[in-house]
Image (cartoon, rainbow, N blue to C red; front, side, top):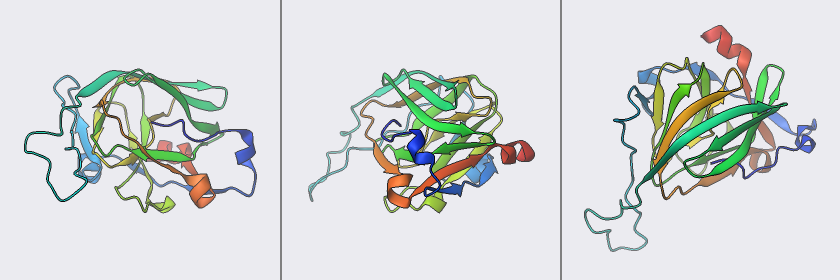
Length: 208
């Protein structure tokens, strides 16, 4: 989930740096540390992680998985220069970034320790997934952008840092499934690194 950070024009001042995210054309091989491709939404099950233990006594076998899953449409729109998303699975809408000429600027990401998340295109062209591998000591240069042509969906693994999808054409409709617990751990790259994550769209066109 996004929506924890502000996207007001005050943050576009020159004293906020920009880190240009490298764009990678996704393949099953280079994506496997982050998740896997999904070719059939209906048969794909959400990966659920067992509830973590808090002391030395273990969680009983077969328990800690009972939260279930939620699913629904995940729509994306461009409102002026603001990239907006609506996740009906959890009933939340939020700004995910700002479109500036040939770039998308975003300042946040999160991960779900309790489960994976499926993004499957319903009405979509090419899109970018902004991701980083697990670890709370995240660095801004850990982020990469995976380019997809819109022909397959994905399931990202539990613990993977992510933002919602960035559709290249500004608008798209996906369906999503995720853990109903929906725990979120969040990073704000302006507060922590004084820097935007800058996603170049021209690079995408050249690599596609």
